[in-house]
Structures are given as structure tokens and as C-alpha cells.
Length: 119
Image 1 (cartoon, rainbow, N blue to C red):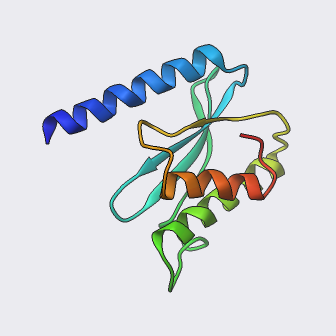
Image 2: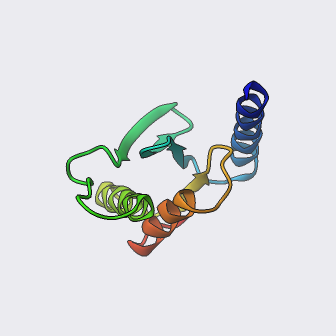
Image 3: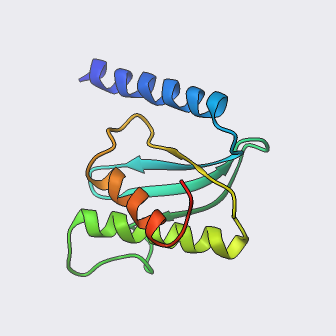
């Protein structure tokens, strides 16, 4: 179990390093997945600050009925709306945090793209 956790951390660090090196964007959409919830935040890599965040725990985004994928899609939509309100017109890098681009992680990206955010 420890090896699995450490390998995910290494994958995440390697992915983040390559994003910063290859990407021309100064901002990234970082995603964290727990067993129950999903968290997303937009980070300014130059100033090392979190600009805003969204999670499936928030009252605005909580679902009474529905799956985790629907909640993840809603988180993606919400963070895209907030980014567009703040005036993000440039492309934002998508940091999947060492997770596979599948399931809830993919739903966050799809939700953000559906509201017009460029990833």
C-alpha cells in the first residue's frame, strides 16, 4: 500500500514538472480526488497562490441524488464559471495530479470545457 501511495506522488510530481516546463500558461487547474469528494483549484504558478477553488463538499455544489461523476462534472462547471468571471481568457493547464484521465478526473475537465474554459 505504501508503494502505491508513493508511486502516485512521484507520478504527480513528474506530471507537474512537465506541465510547468512545457506549458506556456501561468495558471493550472489542479484536481484532487478522495474516496468521497473531488476538489479543484486554479493556481497561479508564478506567484504560487491559489486563486479560487471548488469542491463537491460546498453547499452550492452538493447533490441530493446522483453519482460522483455528476458531482465532479458540476465542480468543473463551477470552477469554469468562476474563472470566466475573473477574466481568464488564456489557456489553463490541466493538472490531473497523478491520477488517470478517466472517470471523475475526466468529468471535471469535461465540465470545465462545457462552460467555455480552455484547457
